[in-house]
Length: 342
Ligand code: CP
Image (cartoon, rainbow, N blue to C red; front, side):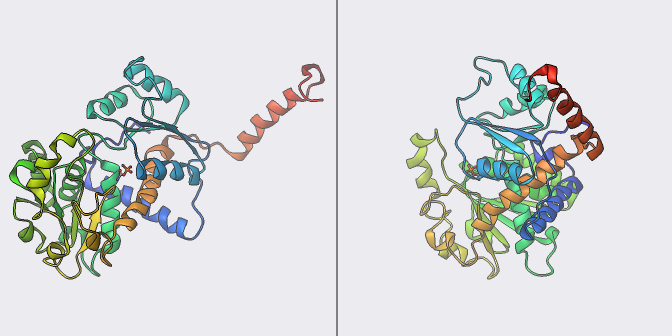
């Protein structure tokens, strides 16, 4: 199988993205019956993190274990990543010892550089531009929580808040899949023109729609799902007063704003959250909040993505071939002259 990386949902068709989700749903159904198939038996995942993580790190590591493989956690500062060794050399070495690489990098160029030189699939675990594994999970979660009989293509998703890397990926996957996407934020914090152009091009192909507004109340009126994310990230601490003043109180997902949405609307957040900032506790813990279903689905979708990208590239030797090689090594070890086995 040709080498494919998962760096951006824009690199994939609607059908390919839906196949990834369908695979994840099948593996989740098997897991719920206690029988996750060992599709990645003996495979190894190198996980590079330049930033901390709870969900991405744990979901990928558990996914590999449950699929019969293994994951290595390479924490921030642990390996030579473009500092004492070039990205080229790191990518080549990791490719010789692993079947797949997942990386969370500060700069998007770092992961594209890794992918350029890697000889195994590279999966994007978040960069300063996007978070594609998160949004595959999010769409699967939406499918599980759609009102009965509603099609994905008729679904309205509203993101309230800063134009984060999660916003970019969510806007792009929803418009690619033909959904109706709205982003509500103060003008200064709306998505850059380049992202909007890509999303509009998606809509032209998919019949989806894109609305950008600074009116949060109008934005939630038709929403099936209301999504938010942090208003500031590590490194933006000096902007906190300015950002808080821009977003609070109108863009906080409070019960007052949530109640402006249809009575079936569900609340989503990729987490981690700053409770009481971008969303109140009342909404985070509301009966129609699905934030922990979303988190759990990171595990099921990481399995689906790992299987999608890795399984077709693995060798699948017969039991006879495995027995032949084991027998050959054992025969060598058992020769009296080797002195290895007494
Ligand atoms: N949503 C998400 O990616 O969480 P982590 O930063 O904990 O991995």
